[in-house]
Image 1 (tube, rainbow, N blue to C red):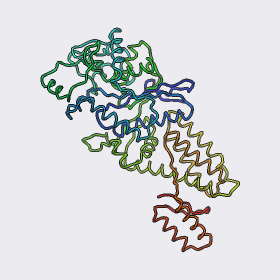
Image 2: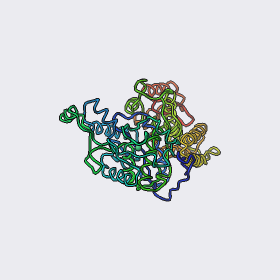
Image 3: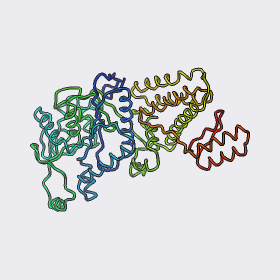
Image 4: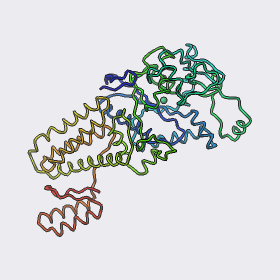
Length: 473
Ligand SMILES: [Zn+2]
């Protein structure tokens, strides 16, 4: 298995000899998660399910950031307590993941449950000279960590000019220093009023560092150190988290432990655009996971994700949606067709090459995924087998048809895509038998009447050399 590592810039070889420790950055729960988030989590779910289907042992850990500036800001806007806002959206996120069929995460770790570990890590950084106390909190001194910027390939100066989720602070040593622990500010009378109403109060913890709350980046390394120790195998997340978040994680953990590398492989998923534009509330192209699932099948979303290489950006359009839907439908129809042929065919010798197709396809599928999870190429192997199989469907032996249908189901299932076969009700099956009998007896008017009836009931009817092939429309 080869996986591309963002830090080294090349594909690294990974073996399944030992249990893999894997962490993917979870959401900051201040709002509904959108389809950009879903792209990342659905991809990692498919990748991990695939590895497990091949006998890999993995522990998949994800954090949930339930304390953060964004949560506090949004809660204040809404006039509710940050804790209840975070609780609400954490629950909502887990419901979304369930609806998307994301089942591979072994543990969701809530940041607020790891305050002692966070404090311990900040103390270790301070003891080693990497963290210092300023007037409003503890900061990481990026000038002390010579490798700062190695993941995102930025110099310290470039790092300092970035404005994305950089902590403000009046007496920081370097502009790019990020906050590890925010001290609770002196309360104004307005704050006290709000506190008394039990509403906009900022959560805080009384610790050896002083009363306050953790910064964003330290939450993740405190959690992973607790579960995995200072070094582990794979860290994943959206490419937009590379800087400053992942850069900060490297600095914190390597500085705190003196061990490097922090992780063996950094995996980053590409961005999701909507009609070529960045998703934003102001452009009115913001689609939450719930919005998507209200109109479409979760499996269509997964197909859409898998039709792209995870490192590529993905452009969400109506055409892509249609293509994904049609791809899924095409495979489902094929699986039904193979089931039909397996029941109806009486051939003992099949078409040349068809017997080897399931194994050849599986080999191509695995080879594609072993090359840095090339899901579009893996799917192409299945689509190729489907198209070949469709061409010779009526000349297949029952055994060949069965093996081909099962192959398609098994390989898609390994990526978390469940292929559902049409189950025809008894009354429909009886109508089909009657229709086929009329046709054999050349009673075409009666046969046609039954076809129309089936169609009016919502079925698609195809006359084939093996009889009527019927599916739900
Ligand atoms: Zn993170």
